[in-house]
Image (cartoon, rainbow, N blue to C red):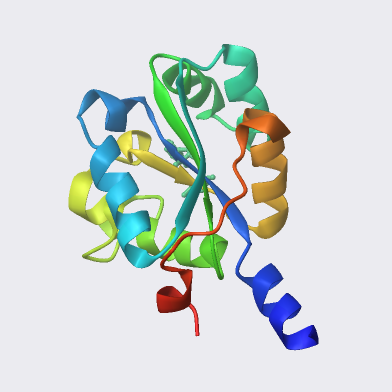
Length: 160
Ligand code: IDP
Protein backbone atom coordinates (compact mmCIF):
# COMPACT_ATOMS: atom_id res chain seq x y z
CA UNK A 1 0.00 0.00 0.00
CA UNK A 2 0.88 3.68 0.10
CA UNK A 3 2.61 3.57 3.47
CA UNK A 4 4.89 0.73 2.46
CA UNK A 5 5.99 2.29 -0.83
CA UNK A 6 6.59 5.66 0.89
CA UNK A 7 8.78 3.95 3.49
CA UNK A 8 10.69 2.08 0.80
CA UNK A 9 11.52 5.26 -1.12
CA UNK A 10 12.36 7.25 2.02
CA UNK A 11 14.81 4.52 2.97
CA UNK A 12 16.49 4.55 -0.43
CA UNK A 13 18.05 8.02 -0.27
CA UNK A 14 21.63 7.88 -1.51
CA UNK A 15 24.77 9.82 -0.64
CA UNK A 16 28.18 9.99 -2.29
CA UNK A 17 30.83 9.26 0.33
CA UNK A 18 34.51 9.34 -0.65
CA UNK A 19 37.67 8.55 1.28
CA UNK A 20 40.11 11.14 -0.03
CA UNK A 21 43.82 10.38 -0.78
CA UNK A 22 44.93 11.23 2.79
CA UNK A 23 42.43 8.75 4.21
CA UNK A 24 43.51 6.03 1.78
CA UNK A 25 47.24 6.59 2.45
CA UNK A 26 46.59 6.49 6.20
CA UNK A 27 44.69 3.19 6.00
CA UNK A 28 41.37 4.66 7.14
CA UNK A 29 39.16 3.15 4.41
CA UNK A 30 37.89 0.41 6.70
CA UNK A 31 37.19 2.82 9.57
CA UNK A 32 35.09 5.05 7.33
CA UNK A 33 33.09 2.22 5.82
CA UNK A 34 32.64 0.63 9.24
CA UNK A 35 30.91 3.74 10.65
CA UNK A 36 28.36 3.81 7.84
CA UNK A 37 27.77 0.05 7.93
CA UNK A 38 27.34 -0.12 11.67
CA UNK A 39 24.88 2.77 11.58
CA UNK A 40 22.70 0.64 9.31
CA UNK A 41 23.46 2.19 5.93
CA UNK A 42 23.73 -0.03 2.89
CA UNK A 43 26.75 0.05 0.58
CA UNK A 44 25.46 0.04 -3.01
CA UNK A 45 28.56 1.26 -4.88
CA UNK A 46 32.31 1.26 -4.29
CA UNK A 47 35.47 1.67 -6.34
CA UNK A 48 39.08 2.72 -5.97
CA UNK A 49 40.58 5.07 -8.53
CA UNK A 50 43.06 7.90 -8.96
CA UNK A 51 40.81 10.74 -10.14
CA UNK A 52 41.91 12.80 -13.15
CA UNK A 53 42.28 16.55 -12.63
CA UNK A 54 39.20 16.92 -14.83
CA UNK A 55 37.10 14.67 -12.61
CA UNK A 56 38.40 16.39 -9.45
CA UNK A 57 37.56 19.82 -10.94
CA UNK A 58 34.06 18.72 -11.87
CA UNK A 59 33.53 17.25 -8.41
CA UNK A 60 34.54 20.52 -6.73
CA UNK A 61 33.06 22.82 -9.44
CA UNK A 62 31.21 24.87 -6.81
CA UNK A 63 34.60 26.03 -5.46
CA UNK A 64 36.02 27.02 -8.88
CA UNK A 65 37.53 30.50 -8.53
CA UNK A 66 38.19 30.31 -4.80
CA UNK A 67 41.81 30.69 -3.62
CA UNK A 68 42.04 27.10 -2.39
CA UNK A 69 40.54 25.53 -5.56
CA UNK A 70 43.81 24.68 -7.43
CA UNK A 71 45.30 23.07 -4.31
CA UNK A 72 42.08 21.16 -3.72
CA UNK A 73 42.04 19.75 -7.25
CA UNK A 74 45.76 18.91 -7.12
CA UNK A 75 45.29 17.10 -3.84
CA UNK A 76 42.21 15.09 -4.82
CA UNK A 77 43.91 13.91 -8.01
CA UNK A 78 47.23 13.19 -6.25
CA UNK A 79 46.39 9.64 -5.24
CA UNK A 80 43.83 6.91 -4.88
CA UNK A 81 40.40 7.63 -3.49
CA UNK A 82 37.66 5.20 -2.50
CA UNK A 83 34.35 6.36 -3.93
CA UNK A 84 31.25 4.92 -2.26
CA UNK A 85 27.50 5.23 -2.46
CA UNK A 86 25.59 4.55 0.73
CA UNK A 87 21.84 4.18 0.87
CA UNK A 88 19.32 4.63 3.67
CA UNK A 89 16.93 6.91 5.51
CA UNK A 90 18.23 10.49 5.66
CA UNK A 91 21.73 9.29 4.69
CA UNK A 92 22.79 12.65 3.21
CA UNK A 93 22.15 14.73 6.35
CA UNK A 94 23.11 11.98 8.77
CA UNK A 95 26.25 11.28 6.77
CA UNK A 96 27.30 14.93 7.11
CA UNK A 97 26.72 14.74 10.86
CA UNK A 98 28.81 11.56 11.09
CA UNK A 99 31.59 13.20 9.03
CA UNK A 100 31.73 16.44 11.05
CA UNK A 101 32.59 20.06 10.26
CA UNK A 102 34.85 20.87 7.29
CA UNK A 103 37.57 22.05 9.68
CA UNK A 104 38.44 18.97 11.78
CA UNK A 105 39.49 21.20 14.67
CA UNK A 106 35.87 22.37 14.83
CA UNK A 107 34.35 18.91 14.32
CA UNK A 108 32.38 17.44 17.20
CA UNK A 109 34.04 14.56 19.08
CA UNK A 110 32.93 11.20 17.72
CA UNK A 111 32.71 12.42 14.14
CA UNK A 112 35.05 10.94 11.55
CA UNK A 113 36.98 14.17 11.02
CA UNK A 114 37.37 14.82 14.75
CA UNK A 115 38.50 11.27 15.37
CA UNK A 116 40.91 11.03 12.43
CA UNK A 117 41.98 14.47 11.17
CA UNK A 118 43.52 17.83 12.09
CA UNK A 119 43.88 20.09 9.01
CA UNK A 120 41.07 21.31 6.74
CA UNK A 121 43.02 20.30 3.61
CA UNK A 122 43.58 16.80 5.04
CA UNK A 123 40.11 16.03 6.40
CA UNK A 124 40.08 12.46 4.97
CA UNK A 125 36.52 12.23 3.68
CA UNK A 126 33.89 13.82 1.47
CA UNK A 127 30.13 13.51 1.88
CA UNK A 128 27.38 15.06 -0.25
CA UNK A 129 25.84 18.18 1.33
CA UNK A 130 22.33 17.84 -0.14
CA UNK A 131 20.20 15.31 -1.96
CA UNK A 132 20.68 17.32 -5.18
CA UNK A 133 24.49 17.30 -4.77
CA UNK A 134 24.35 13.58 -4.04
CA UNK A 135 22.54 12.89 -7.31
CA UNK A 136 25.01 15.04 -9.26
CA UNK A 137 28.06 13.47 -7.61
CA UNK A 138 26.82 9.87 -7.95
CA UNK A 139 26.18 10.45 -11.66
CA UNK A 140 29.66 12.01 -12.00
CA UNK A 141 31.55 9.17 -10.30
CA UNK A 142 29.48 6.09 -11.16
CA UNK A 143 27.78 4.50 -14.14
CA UNK A 144 24.28 3.22 -13.43
CA UNK A 145 25.43 -0.40 -13.83
CA UNK A 146 28.04 0.08 -11.09
CA UNK A 147 25.33 0.56 -8.44
CA UNK A 148 23.72 -2.51 -6.91
CA UNK A 149 20.06 -2.83 -6.03
CA UNK A 150 19.51 -5.40 -3.31
CA UNK A 151 17.72 -5.96 -0.03
CA UNK A 152 19.73 -6.72 3.10
CA UNK A 153 18.59 -9.58 5.34
CA UNK A 154 18.67 -7.16 8.29
CA UNK A 155 16.56 -4.33 6.88
CA UNK A 156 13.56 -5.18 9.08
CA UNK A 157 15.90 -4.89 12.09
CA UNK A 158 17.13 -1.45 11.07
CA UNK A 159 13.81 0.02 9.85
CA UNK A 160 10.44 -0.35 11.64
P1 IDP B 1 33.00 19.81 2.90
O1 IDP B 1 34.04 18.84 2.41
O2 IDP B 1 32.87 19.77 4.40
O3 IDP B 1 31.68 19.69 2.18
P2 IDP B 1 33.50 22.21 1.31
O4 IDP B 1 33.23 23.61 1.78
O5 IDP B 1 32.63 21.67 0.24
O6 IDP B 1 33.54 21.28 2.60
O7 IDP B 1 35.02 22.21 0.80
C1 IDP B 1 35.53 21.10 0.10
C2 IDP B 1 36.89 20.75 0.64
O8 IDP B 1 37.79 21.82 0.35
C3 IDP B 1 36.95 20.60 2.16
O9 IDP B 1 36.62 19.29 2.59
C4 IDP B 1 38.38 20.97 2.47
O10 IDP B 1 39.24 19.83 2.30
C5 IDP B 1 38.70 21.99 1.41
N1 IDP B 1 38.53 23.36 1.90
C6 IDP B 1 37.37 24.00 2.13
N2 IDP B 1 37.56 25.25 2.55
C7 IDP B 1 38.88 25.44 2.56
C8 IDP B 1 39.72 26.55 2.90
O11 IDP B 1 39.25 27.63 3.27
N3 IDP B 1 41.05 26.33 2.79
C9 IDP B 1 41.58 25.15 2.39
N4 IDP B 1 40.83 24.08 2.06
C10 IDP B 1 39.50 24.23 2.14
